[in-house]
Amino acid sequence: MEVEQMQSETMQQGQEQEGEELIQVSFQNLEVLMDQGIASSDIQKLNDAGYHTVESIAHATVRKLSEVKGISENKVNKLKDLCKALVPMDFKTAADALEDRKNVVQLTTGSVELDKLLEGGIETGSLTEAFGEFRTGKTQLCHTLCVTCQMAVTDGGAEGKAIYIDTEGTFRPERLKQIAERFGMDPDACLENVAYARAHNSEHQLELLKMAAAIMSQDRYALIVVDSATALFRTDYSGRGELSERQMQLGQFLRQLTRLAEEFGVAVFITNQVTADPGGMSFAKDSTKAIGGNIIAHASTTRLRLRKGRGENRICTIFDSPSLPEADAQFAVGASGVCDATE
Image 1 (cartoon, rainbow, N blue to C red):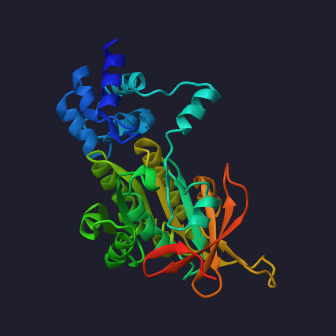
Image 2: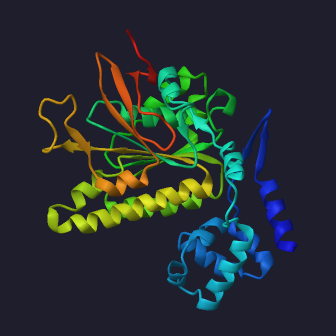
Image 3: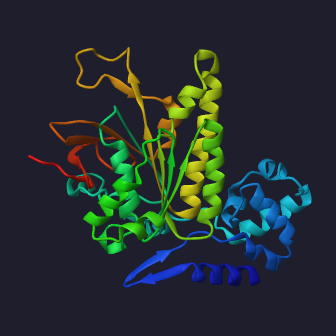
């Protein structure tokens, strides 16, 4: 009964009321385990190893937890038992799953037609991938989402901060200010709500996710952007001899991103590069394919293909999705980010 009461109180503390909309924080900090006899020194060891929430412990394997320095096998088993009591991990009915889906928030892209295509926008709690050639609007979409995620739920936002991991050196804070002004937001406050990091290699990229988990456990975040997720893996591993290692490390990175999406209820938006498809038809409109193979294809919940249109217009196609039909929509890229297509 004590565990159930503690879980209820923790979830109530993690709810913020904004008008009629209810933003529910989906995670519980490790400090709640101190009431169950877990020492603060052990919690610090778990934090140092990248575990910051009760959910992260519940979702981790015993083998991974046993690798944490200073945590014995008995402590691992005790932690797992406590966390399983706090985090629902059993079967539930499809009706309950449908009720849970009502808590999913969509982030507006800045384009009415694109939002219609996505049935509201970029979904929280899952991983969305956008791939395409250069100049198709991938980075501009990333910048726009960093602003719109801060807006009220009624305006197409999620009232949270954003994390931006840049692997190609294309992040431009001045663009965020322009987009914020377009939506009538305070540009300086908007910049303060975006945590930015430049990844220099694939190992550093994975390390940044541990840092992201730490800062997300301290505040309300709504979005993680990785632009692009594959660029550094593409250069750090070359040739067929390193392909297997590259795919394994890329799979680990994507698994961590998926875990963060589920753990913190944030939208994860990643961009991906393309390569020429030698097996494709030479006369086809788009003979390119996304890199990363099946690893990234299976990890992404929704996949969007972006391509160039006429002038500043771009075309977005639903390439793969569990709920969205295959369709196209046009949008435009301008000084104030992603907007509606021009004639």
